[in-house]
Length: 176
Ligand code: ZN
Image (tube, rainbow, N blue to C red):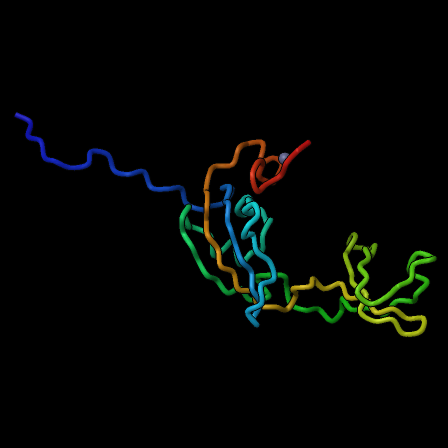
């Protein structure tokens, strides 16, 4: 005779973990070393991306690996795994005539430099006489970043999302 003991029959299915090619949806707040908020998804759509696709900085991908929906984490990411170290070689002096005629070049203005490695955004940091100093470093280069993250969803990417390299729908890409 079969004997029955009281208890749950099926084990709860564990929530999907963040892994390569998974769609991950997060809310995040990014602060610098001084504790200033640089960016946040609070009050806006969360950020959706494909894990392992290089859509977010590598240090954050590493920290999220294995996490599940509902997990929260605080992570400090060194510049090397964020927007890179500050490269002095990306600061260059160029003659004013390198800019389109009629452009009143001034510090703070952003341009796209057509380099042999493709287009690169630069910011003007100084104008002295006929020489203009431009900086091609990412604004967050050299900075240690502090992220507070809440994972709101982890799911399998569709074949279409994988072929496009981005997430569709809320927090992701919207095609016309
Ligand atoms: Zn798409």
